[in-house]
Each structure stands twice: as C-alpha cells, then as structure tokens.
Image (cartoon, rainbow, N blue to C red):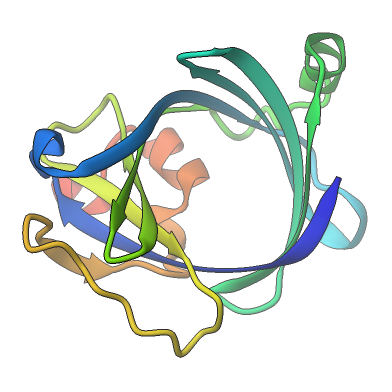
Length: 168
C-alpha cells in the first residue's frame, strides 16, 4: 500500500504519432468510480490490461489543490475488485482508455487516448514539486493546460463521451 502526495499536471494535446515516441508500455484501463469515501475522498477501482496480464487497483484521493492530491493506492485481487464494483457511483460512467507511457528527457509521460476521439488526448506528468520545469517532445502539440479543469476530469470525459473542445 502506498500513500503519498501526487503532484500532477495535465494537458490537452493533439493526438500525436505514437510511433515517434519512446514508448515504454501500453495499457488498456477501465476505471470505475465508487461512491465517495470519508471526507469526500474520491474512490475508484481499475482493471488494467497489459502485456503480462491483468491487474486490479483500488485508489482513494483527497484533492488538496488542482495539481496536488493525497493518494492511497494499492493492488487488489479480482474478487475484491468485483466486490468493490457493487459500490460504484451510478452517476458516473466507467472510463475506458488506452494509456501510452513514454520517456522524454528523463520524464515519464502518460498519454491517455479515449475511444471517442481520434483528434485529442490527455497528457499527464507526475512532478517532484509544483515548480518543476517540464520539457515536452517536439512531436507533441499542446493545445491547453487542463490541470484542475473539471470538464477534463476522467469522470466528466466519460460522462460527456467527448472532449469539451469537440462539443463547443
């Protein structure tokens, strides 16, 4: 079990040519939100499919600032996953996405690609501190920083079935 502060920034990007990235792994993720926990913490479970099999995780987050959260995350077995699914938040749709993890200048980026868009993706980077400088690959076109923008949260993207910029 790990509990720590997660400092993360998110960016709306034009869908890049993934073959031009230094890809380290690719995952298929189904993320289901559960009813809120103690102190209105956000709870979720994930089914993560990767080359070496399927794993399941449970995560609980408390938002401190738009880019900082206290996070408690750990791996669970299939039985616990299925049991927790009984606590799903029926107001939120499960999120399905393909996550491509790639390295650039010593930074491990996560590119989340959603089945509803071939034009856009979300690029995330966990930071050591909020002032850390970020170096982006030249092959990535940043459209906007969406850190803390509720419309671009996974839950809202799944509910809308589109990026906000595609429905305006």
